Image (tube, rainbow, N blue to C red; front, side):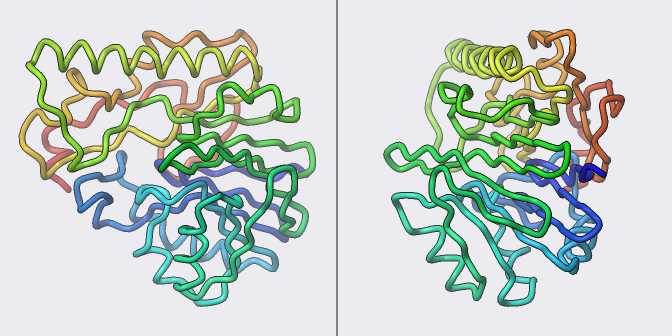
Length: 288
């Protein structure tokens, strides 16, 4: 029986079989990332218990793509028992591995072309080390199951290296900008630059879908909401943080691909959630 794939919000996915569990990028704390400026949308904090319970399976492993705070959630990881197994790519910079070992985890750094076993599941990484940025796409395989989680990883020029056929594909489509890294532009130039960034991201995703031909595509790894910053700082219509309504308007989807606009907690299937998540309302932002 193929593994199940459940979306737990942002870029957190849970792959499970009867005996094994792989938990990807669990950003499940409620205190935000990047100095408390970024928050998950929709909120997923209530699913932390789901993740913790899954990690109690006979074979379990956490898999982290990279060190950014919306993927490497120190608060959530710090709440887990010491000694849990975490797999990461073998990056040139040892920072992520060193941090995880310092937190008491059993860390496996997986070299390019190698894989980590977790019961009847296997995990492979496609790492990109460029300057100060280290990231990795994650390939999880099981019986009749092959899931590529590309997250934020800029490996669009390496998609021909990914084994085929995939059963599921997830990738970031929204732009992102670290806080407090900000730029001073006039309103017109800010909107133009943001629109160009969003168009480029969605164009890359469209090309990836044509190259990979996945039966199921899950938009993920953003956008976030920025509830505690000045009004308009992260407004969807004038920033790189594009919501799914903009993706629907511009994405070129192959005929055989179903787009699943998953909500946190959803089990992923070809007929899962055909309607995009709307941008947050003022009351939803105030909830944070």
